[in-house]
Image (cartoon, rainbow, N blue to C red; front, top):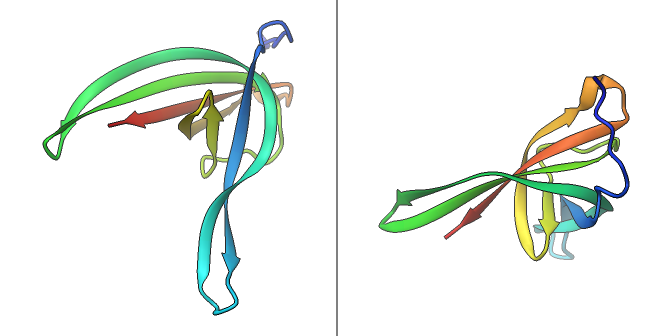
Length: 110
């Protein structure tokens, strides 16, 4: 069965960012995040958990972003949604048909 992404389900706007390197005039390399694409997506919370690390309670939220297929999306990118940052953990091209994709994102909260 092919996943069909209906536009009515994609009510949320997400920004996909990629890490870029630039060289300063002194020759040093600086890294910064820049917008790769801004798209509409269906946003579905999957799970959340809390864990204890370095004397601090931290939280981890996993969210599924369903959207239309895009070329070039990798796990080295991140998603900005509603002021929150999600590291892309998995990129799923449904049935390898280049029609719809799911991006599994993880948000780390301290």
